[in-house]
Length: 305
Image (cartoon, rainbow, N blue to C red; front, side, top):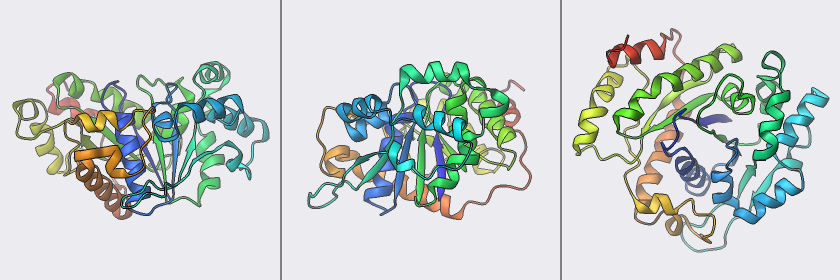
């Protein structure tokens, strides 16, 4: 099993869209057993997969990440009933690239903020790592979608980072996006210190809404990509998530998608290639023995060190 967080501390970088795409293609195109854990209070990725009604039902029935965390805190043992908290999107019977079965752990935004006021940084930052992760071994992948603007007191998403083996960071080709990366790397390094086992490691940056032919990419990201290629910084995925209205529509919870091609339209092949690249990277991944500070390396590259 691999636990992969989709995370960028800056909002608007495409985390939920990338989460939905990777989750759908890993399950439907790569034949993997996948659990999506949505820790964003807005429930964007959970709603895109399940539909709004099923998300509301899970919240009403107290089958959410908040309820699972409350059980973990109360019982302090590896749960045997994780299925009680998971919502299921059944596979479609469509021909061709049918959508596969997906399991989803839904957030409860209102109660999540209340819960975080009760959680202890010292006692509760590694609940998922110590108690939940061992209970999820049946899955090939657990994909964790995170909100923006995480702080050390944001203990629900911090738990998601701490339990992760790897982090994938979507980033747009703008100067403001690059400028926000130090904070993202700060929080990843903080999660590494909490986990104490070298994880989560950076599996790479995914260039989102990017066309390498455009000046915006050459001005803001090309220098970084070249340095990453030289292995002085975390790697950049070879395949990109291009600018496409189809990607924006793919997360619309009001639409009834039956196949991967329905959901992703003319961007189907791009999403497929990114999922394939992630799968290959995850299977071959070996954490580096010596890990220089990602944040320091990035600040030096930006001329801010």
